[in-house]
Image (cartoon, rainbow over all chains, first blue to last red; front, side, top):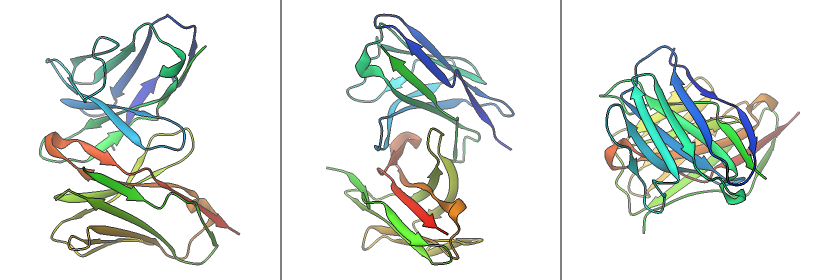
Length: 116
Length: 111
């Protein structure tokens, strides 16, 4: 199989704090991972593409200094929401590409972030 | 501008009937289209992929069609079951391997 995990599954934090979310490919190596955000009843919106060993590519309108992405190994990418505010409360989902030639993405279970 | 649209209204059907969900897109020429299932509070789960040169694809009770002239894909679940209740998302492949998702259609199958 191709399993992707995320940690934590839920996090509640105070406004102004930073939160780190981990995305791991458990049984395969992923050179490319993607980070999405999903608001209630809305679609998944791509935030950034994370490539192992290089800088992430951010989508238009996503602040790279606010959403720090690190893809330090072939099985781990992290998303850090810095100085979180209530409007950052959302469902954050990562996905990973298992094979370079394939475009099938395997998704993690998501992380629910609530900023008070 | 590029758009992907799915039925925004929830679809309610009776168990045993066929559910049909629609995905329309504009200003894209995707090489392929994917369908995912998403349960509340969970990440999407891949169901089917259909390529631009394929008209139809089947997997067990699932069937997907892809009409590049109409710029539309239809997703069918035959002999639907309450366990099929979920939100179904279509997604197109954009440049750089990025997936662009529709907003999803919520399906509710009543026993």
